[in-house]
Image (cartoon, rainbow, N blue to C red; front, side):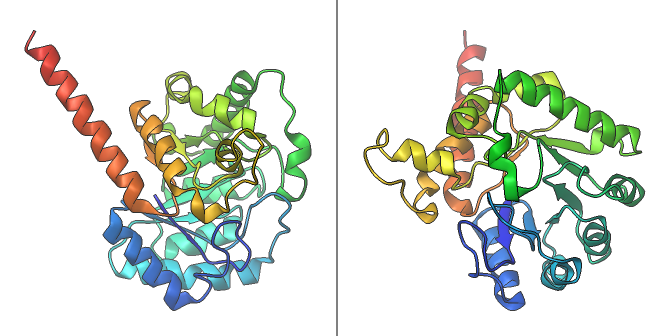
Length: 274
């Protein structure tokens, strides 16, 4: 899943694809690099971000979705607003990726259910403006599992078919670096216990910067210098059976998935020869 942020303030590439034409070109470039689908969002959800209004989010997102869909791209829309999801699906989006898992807008689940499209339910504890204050866990893996089950149950109770739900552990959302690393280490458990396809969105996030900062002895590298670290998480996610990874730069992660598949195939062949 390649990322197109149609925003001026996203943490890693804010402003680069804010123009509609540039955003469409970026989406096509990501497909050329190996993206299977392109996630278009018009609202930054970085820690501390304030929300944009509905009209502005629609203005940013819908023309990009329409343009990419017209070129045959499989598009997902990254939004917490039912109205944006509804209009994006009408413009050609084929999946709704809601970081709130349907909890920010009570109309979201009914809208997605009515549209009959897949829905990404992410682990979420509240809006970006104060989510860092919510990063308090006794056991982060157990609590994320429990809270994701509740969100999944809510989506299904609202009419979304279980086989159309994808789950996302919400790396970086109300979590510190230690929480994120524990969740990455438990991706296989999350997938098995939730029983749904797993989306992993680690791309360029703060916890990778902390890992690369040499145990705190140096400043974390800027977001755009974390793509190799992102590809490392992609490798782990692929080995643990993730459905997709959401990344800003596709080629390295696509190559990582190819290598994992080749190694797994070689291992199966070697087992068959015994």
